[in-house]
Every structure is written in structure tokens, then in C-alpha cells.
Length: 270
Image (cartoon, rainbow, N blue to C red; front, side, top):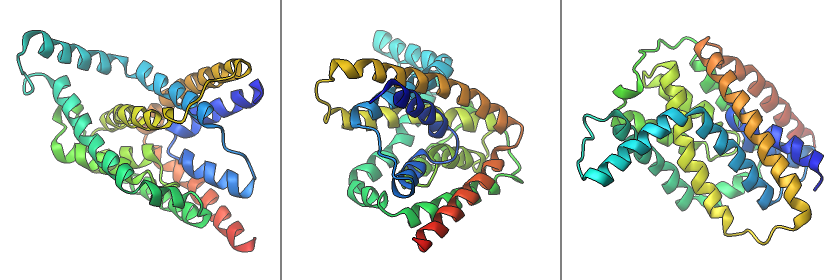
């Protein structure tokens, strides 16, 4: 693996991981139609680490306050869930992680087989576009994170679990679900990506079992891939929030429809 390949993959990881266009869907189509070889498991973990660090950097304020609330409990033994909004947020993040943990554990093989079906992936891209488009005329109730409830957490968590299907965008589904539930644009965005942290850690944890000793010649490319995934992820996260606040989140639907229809057509021609 060259440093240039790692650089390119890092940029692509940062872009597609956070934009509502389905990174897994693009990977399947690239493998099937463009004959692009997927990155090795070691590089894949490093790229995910880069995007995870980007989320942590952007949401360091919320993460810091959650950690302080947890430390307070361990030090004092006092439980103040109702009075502490960040402790409540932590509870909702745990609750929202349950659906993806269950779905990933129970249907891992079935989901894996979907990665071999480019036509299904193409249809899922089109469906994702429809969901994004549905947010265009949505009247947002502007409920903030401190008004989050159990149904919100489970709903967004279920949306994240459904996004295990290649072609369904995780950020597209979770942010859209948050908006449909009546969360403000900023709150839907923040809860979506905070919820991604345990999901990415869990997925990376499963992959770590397959790691072997990293050859010295691969250390530099892996570092380059991780850093570029981190930097491109930072940029995309900031740009995406601006897009959502301006009410242009639905514009990604056009891109998904074009890619989905083109790949679907190509699958029938071949």
C-alpha cells in the first residue's frame, strides 16, 4: 500500500462517512462496477479511528460534560439523572445503541450477504434519497437535546440500526429521524453523531480481533490515512451542520437518485 492510496482512502472515508450518501453503498458499487479493491482490515480500522477522532474533536464539549457527570457519580455515589441533562443524554445514547447492537449481532451474516447485491444497494440509495427529500418541507418543532425522550432515542437508534444495510446512509437516516421526531436541526445533528461514537467503537472492536502485527513499511501509510480521515472528517462535520441549518439537507437526494438509478441501470445491462 502506497502513501498516496492511503491519502486518497482517508479523504474518501472522511467524506462518505459523514455525508448522507452511504459510505458502505459506495464501497459495494466501487467493488462491483469499478473493480476497486477494498482496503485491508488494518487500514479500515485506522480510517475509522480517524473519523472517530473527528467526532470527538467536534463534540468534545458534550463528551467532556458527560464524563464529568459520570465521574461525579463515581466520586459521590449520588444519582442526579433528572437534574443533570448530560447524564440523561448519556443514558439516551446507551438506549439508542441497543438497536444496532441487537441487529448487528442477530443479523450479521444476512447483512453481510447484502454487500454482494449491487441492485439492492442501488435501491437503498434511492430510498435514502427519498427519506432525505421528505425532510424538505418538514416543520421542525425545535426541541433541544435537553428535551430528548425515550422514544426519540429508540427511534434514532433504530434508524442507525437500519443503516447497517449497505446503501442506507447512517447520518442521513439518524438526522432525518431526529427531524421527524421534532428535534431541532442542531439537536438532530448532535445526537446523530454522538450516537455514532459507541457504534464506531463497537465495530472497530470486533475488527481488532482480526489484526496481526503491522509491518514497519505500512506504519507511515496507515498514519497518513488516519490523519487525512481525521482532517477531512472535521471539515465535513462543520460543513454538514451549516447545510442542515440552511435547510439544504434534502439536496443530497438528487445525488443519491442519480447514483442509484445509474448503478441500477448498469447492473441490468451487464
